[in-house]
Image 1 (cartoon, rainbow, N blue to C red):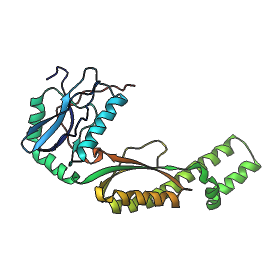
Image 2: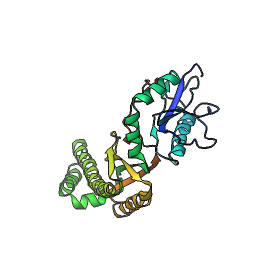
Image 3: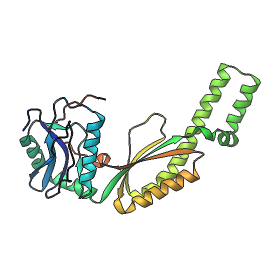
Image 4: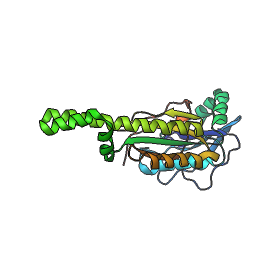
Length: 252
């Protein structure tokens, strides 16, 4: 094995096929191989020297995971997971076999979809019509213009737009939860009133998109909805792939 370690993409059940001609990280892409033990298999390649979070390698990592998922569930590793050697990976798989098999069962036939919701600036007129406090602040700013009046009005408008967007996003969330069943909130994103990931059955992805499209049409004056997916099921995997990952610096 290469001296730079073993790059780990994910964990599958034994017998899971590799997608044909799907390159791994590095330039040129490292050959990907399977490392089986018991009822589990790690998907690995030799780690390249000087691994960085370049777009090329991030894309190769995600594309491989998505290609693998077409043949069955995959526990995805985050980008940059490098083990010192094959023996350490095999020990971890053996030690956590039951936990990993249960996680694979949960993900079987599922896809991850992400939804982010943002306020829309063009809904100001509707906000003014609906909110008497903002109408009063606007009239005060017109009668007595100045920094303080503009600041109060600006803060009230920003809060009102955020509130309207959050209320609309909550309505969409209720409908999407009925489609997905399993969902989780993601980390806070600047300007975003909702960042949520959903575990969606493959058979329900059309229905998921239909809900988002209807919400976009009905609530376009309140909220902007951005859907990303399908994605590797990062948000629904709670597995520590010990050995510990090396830090991977950002790159171009």
